Length: 273
Image (cartoon, rainbow, N blue to C red):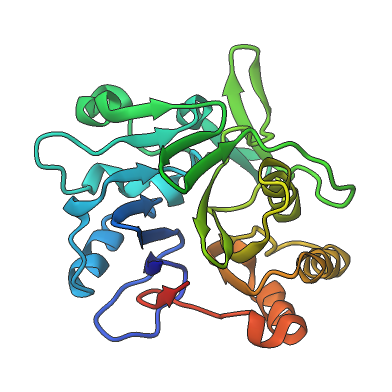
């Protein structure tokens, strides 16, 4: 499997751009998957510089309905029809974050009404899907750990009003390989260990070989970071690739504790799993 990092928060390569967001281009067993699109056309520019033809994508997976993961979709170079776009129906609700006692919009910065081509290609799901052999999309991730609470300060607009967001729309991509499962996560809002436990429940007896993920640990306490890394070590994941919102402190701790099993990657890097 080849994973090209089209968008991430940091870039070190000349001629590429970075932004707060995530976009990955995954090639495996003849299939090509675009996982998230960042917040702008940056992923498009970087893909061109890396020699990647995004029009060859067999599908697009949107991890959740935030601007830094879905904003760039409107720039996708669709010729005629878009490929299938997998999303949870809650992803398109209004989302906001409480900042200095004010609600700040952090949802998808465009509407389906203004982009009928995207709406036509959407595949909504609330359960596990298997779009290609060995490729799975899981959503509505249950919370089963004691130390991973729902992120504070995030809200979603529902018929009953603006309520705390529990991120039921978060989707993860799970790919089967000969060495084990590879798990892709956009932000891990339900908690990265909750997500991994859900994978293990859905695939009993299968090992998780690699984790490529934003983990939303930028503001996590030292204890939560320590417990997160401890669970990763116990699961015996062989490759941990922390991206996007994981946070520099958590990334440093993962590298210190997991050593050669932690791979620090940036925009433009390519992973072979």
